[in-house]
Image (tube, rainbow, N blue to C red; front, side):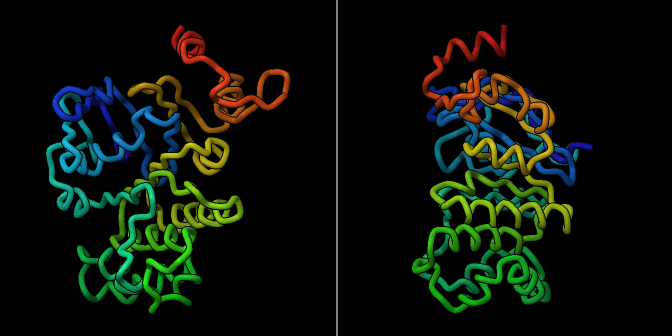
Length: 265
């Protein structure tokens, strides 16, 4: 069963710029789904359409719908969407820098009963022991990896049904990426949280997710089980850095029309 369904979504910025062009995708309940694509493909816009954050950037859903457990949510305010169990971790580790770790976590739990705050914090500290060690430290003085942990921990305080993660690996060392992705896996397995993961690190994302969608220019051009995508020669060449001969190849080496011709031809 799909917890999230996006149907033929169109999003326009500033009344003129069409960013999503009939986008359709889904996220199965209790599973991790990856959304991949190059810069400018529309991945972050997709997450903002789901979480209701488009209006703050002069964006608007002009066609299609976003369904959460079968219920349309694309016209709801961000606060109402959060209360329905959707929480987005924004790209760039948007923590409250002048607040302590503990204060950040309390802010994340503002929609929950006060009786859940302390148990929620202990649950987060169980996933991120480093945050427990720094609970009284100002978030702005933490490393990038610790801030990413805090951003995810703050989201978990809201007890989300659907967790939207926007580029959690951005700017982090490989070992930290591995650690954070393992925690995302644990959260999904132990709490049944549905995860929609936006990533440019295709290899890490497909290793974590069960199903993946690949976007280009505001549309999904390819989707399937992660194992199938990992074994797909075009995905290997354009996103995993391997050509058919096995030598390394960068995404930029391949002209856009070739990808469109192969995938849509």
